[in-house]
Image 1 (cartoon, rainbow, N blue to C red):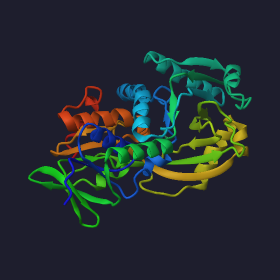
Image 2: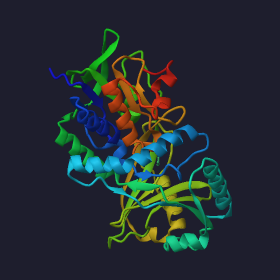
Image 3: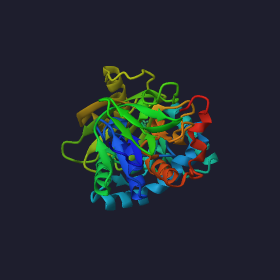
Image 4: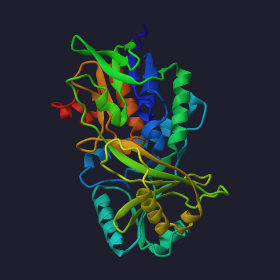
Length: 377
Ligand code: GLY
């Protein structure tokens, strides 16, 4: 029977980063996931945009998002060293634009909100927007530039995380976890779907939207799936039609375009309360492409390479669950909703520190699962 110090349930960006950081801190770690490196992380666009993605009412989450964005350069430098391959981080900035006059007024309100929060954002005229991004439609009304909002290619990041885990001795079990095991009032490991028991000193639940299905009977995790449909396109000549991330307001709807320098482009995303409905719908593809083409007409010339649906792990307050639960031996690293890729470094560091020292760092303390103590495992 295996007995690692830690079993991490879930091999998305968060689970892999937790495993790598915990191993680097001297623990033995096993990741259990039927398909490590896939899931919601594989579908994500990888915008690292705490400022342009700020939402009204999420001011405390903003602090965590900014802290993780600041951590990204050193995190990827260490990751690339450990993995021996690139991690896909790109400093490119983000331009937010408005398609019509109402959108431009709404964008103005967002900019006022961002400035009240002390964030750096530069208001731009339509002409200045087109100087930055010549592919923008002449109809775009105005915009705002945020120098500090960048991107990472999540698929390159996942490949680097898998490489770093492999190089540092993380063990992998490519099976589904049926449940966290409990004995004597504490988590003692996981039961695999095949019936095999993996016993461990601690369990970290990083299974995204699937986390609630894995906690033992009588416990719960306040996470629900929020479906996102997302498109992948590419320029057949390998030319990037945008130089940086683009967020748009189009007739009141949000759309984002995340360009890679080799001509690939990610367009996202819907946010739907549809449970685990995996369908990619014609209506969502139509809406995303219509909005993307309204901002950047050349999108219509790109090859549509992939459509996908994935599930963000949403929580009641839209903020993640990071740290120990009320079940001894079980920590949560889930509920990251729209910010899983952005919050990967700060979550991994916080969970690794907690596993080693028993202390959750101050930056993560407000996001303890114990804030939902009456319902959380
Ligand atoms: N952060 C982008 C999304 O959730 O679609």
